[in-house]
Length: 266
Ligand code: ADP
Ligand code: MG
Image 1 (spheres, protein in one colour):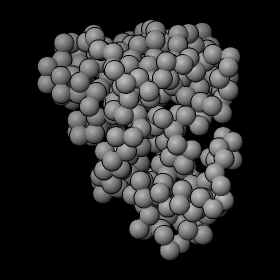
Image 2 (cartoon, rainbow, N blue to C red):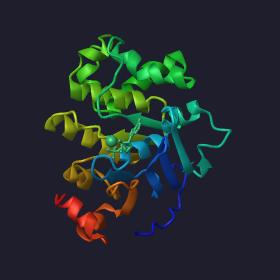
Image 3 (spheres, rainbow, N blue to C red):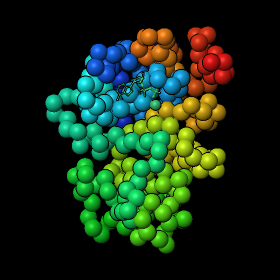
C-alpha cells in the first residue's frame, strides 16, 4: 500500500486507523487505515459488498446504530477521536455530513425547511435574521438556488431526482460540516444531474473534506485527488488493497487486482 505523507494542515482531515467492523459474528472490514487530507476529494472504489458503505457509516458513527454491529479501531477528525466518550452523536452529525445514494429530502417539508432541518436536529444555532442568507448560500453551493429561489415554500418532494439530491447536499451543508460523506450520490441520477453534482463536488472541495463512494471509474478520475481501492476476497472481510493519488492508483497501480478493477476486468 502507498504510504500517505502527513499533511501540514490537519484542521479538517479525517483519518481511519486500523478500523475493523462486524455484523454479528461476521467480519466485513479488516484493519482499514486511510488518511483523507483536508479540503480534498477521496474516492472509495471497489466491487459491491466489499465494505465501502460500512466504512463510510463508521466515519460518522452510523454503524453503531445497526443492531448487532460492532467495530474496532479509531476515527480521528482533526486529530480528535470521534468515538471518545466526550463525543456525542450530534457532534458527529454536525461535523460530518452524509449524502446517500437515494435522494432523501423530507418530501412534504418545504425546500426552505429541508435546508434548515439539520440545524434543529444537531442543535446548531443560527439567528432568525441570518437564516434566509444561510438557505440561499447553501442552495447556491449545491447549484440549486437559481432553480428554486422563487419556490422555496414548495415541498421538497416536488423536485426532480437530481434537484432532490442537490437539496440533500444543501441540507448537509447547512450545519457547516468539516467533512461531507457521499455514498454513490449519482447512481440514481441521469447523466446531466450527475454532471451537476460533480461540478458541485469540485466547487465544495476547497472548503470541505469530501469522501465519495462511486462505481463509476470516470467519475472517480474526474472528481477525486485521492482514491482507495477496497476489496473483499471470497469469504474474507474487506480491506484496502491500495490507496494514493488517483492518477497513480489508475495509471500505475502497485497491485494487479487494482489494475484489473479500474480497467473493468472484474
Ligand atoms: P459496499 O458498500 O462496498 O457494497 P457494504 O458496506 O454495504 O458494501 O457491505 C459490506 C458487507 O456487509 C456485505 O457483505 C454486506 O452484505 C454486509 N452488510 C451490510 N450491511 C449489513 C447489515 N445491516 N447487516 C448485516 N450485514 C450487512
Ligand atoms: Mg454501498
